[in-house]
Length: 258
Image 1: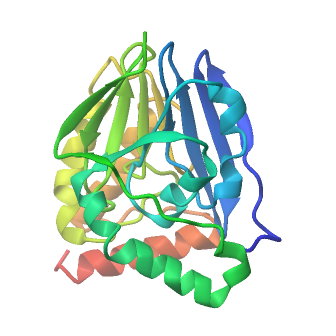
Image 2: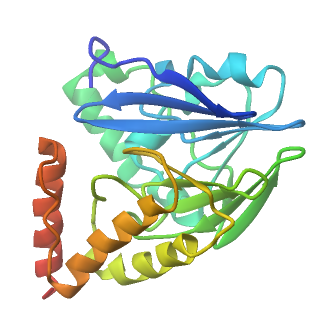
């Protein structure tokens, strides 16, 4: 990503109080969400660059803003300093640890490679963390945060019961997810299956890939199960980024004897 190629996000409103910011960074798409309640707004992920948060101000008005990181990867958490007057930053406890290790290391590497593109990024670590669950009251709307590790140890999902919306972060991804640790896949699948079977969930909004219903969860579950049982589902014709991701996933699982 460079300043010359970074695409500003497209704004898509999918329901009263629910807005999506969708863009591309490097070889893949990425999505953030803005939830607006009567008393508070939440920005779910802040994309890769502060410039990509420009639409937030007009969406939230004078409401206090809480940022929630679905996890601490660079394409989800580096735009926070582009939002005016963030009151708090919420994430799973492991995300705070990452802000002391791999997160600043990644930024330093990108600054060395392209200082002009990344010089305005100032990392904002979580100010509020939780271990398993946390509920945020936005005023007439609640966001229930649940730990669901797999892609990374700090991954979470957010459920809005009033809207039936599951914000899935990187726990669900089409055409296929990124597996960094083969040892987490079993628990990852079990966590997803609980949400897949929850009839209160009517809409699923991942950070990458298409949005839809609970069938998106099943697609990710089926792919991960194929890695677990060694059948290795062929993803078919997919973009080069995901072809390489699939090959890396297979190598990761085979390294664990799968």
